[in-house]
Image (cartoon, rainbow, N blue to C red; front, top):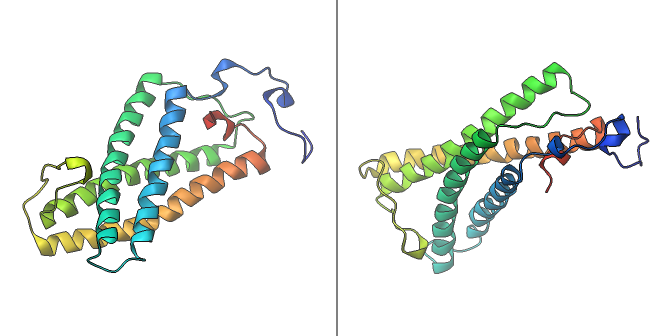
Length: 193
C-alpha cells in the first residue's frame, strides 16, 4: 500500500493504467456541468437574500435561479441518456466492500431523484403562481393551473428539499474525498477530466 504522502496511481496496485479507468468524457463533462449549475443555483438563492424584496437585483437573481434550475433538469436528463449510451462504469480499484457499494448506489439514486424532483417542483411552483416567464425571453409551459395557495405549499416543499440538497451534495463530495485520501482508491479519479 502506498505511503500517506505518496501519490496513488493505478500502478500502485500492481495494475497498468487502462483507457477504461475513467468514465467516458461526455459523462465526466456532464457531471461537472451539473455541479457548476448547482453552485450557481444555490449561490443565486443565497445572494438574493442580501437584496430587499421587490428590488430589481433580487428579481433578476430569482429569475436566473429559475432558468438555471430548469437547465439542471435538461442536463440531468441528457446525462442519464449519455450514461445509458456509454454504459461503461469503470471498476473501483481496489474494490470497496459490498456495504460501501450498496451505500454508493443508494446515494446516487437519491442524488438523481433530487436533481429531477427539485427542478420539477420549481416548475410546478412557477405554474401554480402563473409566473412562467424566464430570462432570455423564454417561457415555460404550465404544468398545472394557477393556484396561489398550492404554489406556496409547493414552494415550501421546494425550499425544504433544497436544504436537504446541501447535505446530499456535501455527503457525496465527502465520500469522494474519503475514497481518494483515506481508502486511496480510484473512485474520484474515475470522474476527473
